[in-house]
Length: 114
Image (cartoon, rainbow, N blue to C red):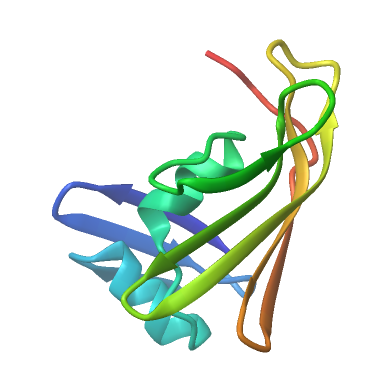
């Protein structure tokens, strides 16, 4: 799934190439996945930042290892599976989000830092 979001517009392309457009990325992802994913926070988590979360753990190299976050009555847990040591700074290579009994795994194959 690919998400391109800008203020006031969003486009999602699924794994079959089907495109969906709308004005609210978080609402669109929620409808397509059935999970109300906090997109603004997810963007920060993918970069290895806690975002608005105040409950998080760091590893021995002071990188995020776990984030706990609540929004709209939903509690999210993010667990980092590793970091890409080839990128500077080191960026996450995988993470897992859970909310209740639902789970999303993200794997970043490579990073292009501009």
